[in-house]
Image 1: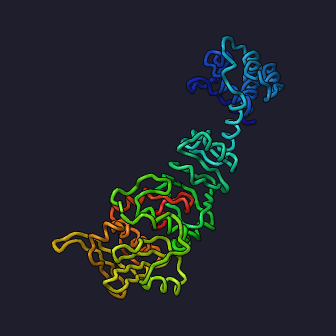
Image 2: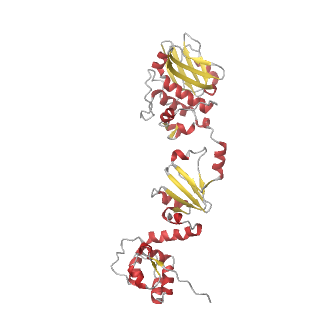
Image 3: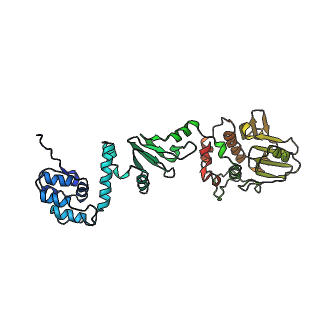
Length: 381
């Protein structure tokens, strides 16, 4: 008959009691004793060390008893230990999770993360309430809340992260990392297809974005662009304009023909007018011909100063367009914001290969839109 191997009890500071009850009393650790009561090791250890009466008393205890800690101390002959400072139920829950976790992994690093281990969605929701930076997903599927930023999710036992998003998520920007965690099939398809940003760009979204970039303020009034201070302000209200009377420019006819929605405009002053719709830009200098540029056709937009003066030029697949008397246009509408808006439109609706500079991306990273549920416009570029 094989000799039975006796296991030790783990006590204070990792001490392992192998010989007798006096070791338990000398190196007593209440939380560890409660944990080993719940996993059954305490009863077996007492039986193995010829303490049957203690073993029977321990076996008879109610694990839900509010005075469980005090009863264990009394049975083991331990005195002078404060028993009201330990949450027996919390210790029990931790031990429950530890036993489940040991079935998934023997990795000591992961075993030490037991407080932040989740075995189902309720576990994950409870773990997140404690705001941990590292979370262990143990098998199964978990819906990952994207509002919980700056998190690292580790996976064991074929853990799957379910991402409830119709477009690819920039996890790096959110500070969210996944290690040994797969994505659900639906989100994998989203990642493969990429994002069609244009379908999110409703006239309401475009109207808000256009006003932010022209005026330099978010809808709530917070300043995000210091380069903007146009004279024409009344036509930028963060909302679409069902009807605008633009006298004698030909703009109205083009807008009606294309069934477009006006999202912002500069009033006709000093023989000038500018109108943004959900599909195109219209510029009218009454001394020149009407400029009509579809966002999808824009390849490049230049606003610069050189020896020849200020230049504002829009390059498209069919040609280039320049505004005359650029200084006056800049004073009226603010060409810095116009340029940024047109470049964004060219990127979303067309095939422009323009790459925003770091400074431009930094400015745009401040632009969040109410009409996009407070998302930042950079998420769509």
